[in-house]
Length: 76
Image 1: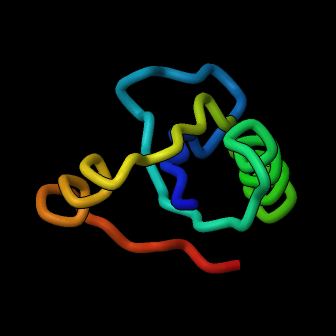
Image 2: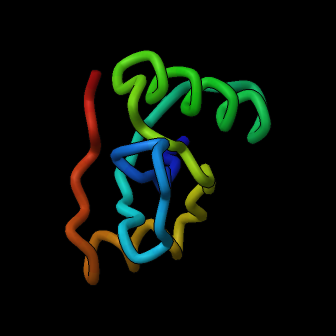
């Protein structure tokens, strides 16, 4: 499953205008388990990041992201 993680690089005075995104692939039994794994993984690698939201990408959404966004899977 591929998740899109919305985050800010700092937990101090977050601003919506500074929200960024990265893409992470994890193996999980359910969507919820995947969201938890992704959040824990990102927070363990980047403790200063403020993870705002983790979204599971559907097949259509993934195709759209590959075509229209700066899509690159983040590997840890």
